[in-house]
Image (cartoon, rainbow, N blue to C red; front, top):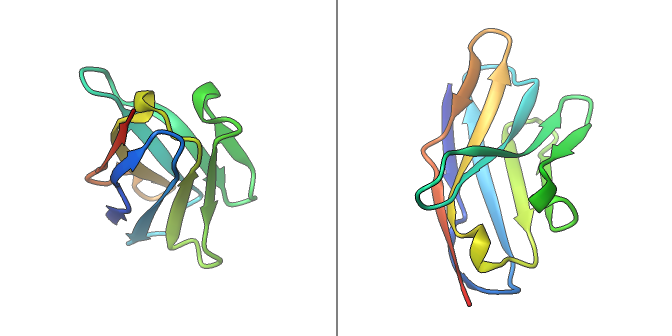
Length: 113
């Protein structure tokens, strides 16, 4: 499984970013994102199932939107209303029946106040 995340960067508070993650190497039933703030553990953020069902952690609800392309080769995370607390590394992840969970290398998002 190969995952390549992109789209991170520096943004002012209240701004938006769209993260992308290109995935290959298997068929993925779940795709999504984890978040790791500086000095903290990585935590689940959002996911989307093959059925289209989405799941979000509380801090992401209403501000972030997870989606995929039709081929389910790319997973996106649209982040609106970013705040300094959203600063950290965002990791895409996928689940396949063959390989289980896999995570990408992460992309850094910095939100300035």
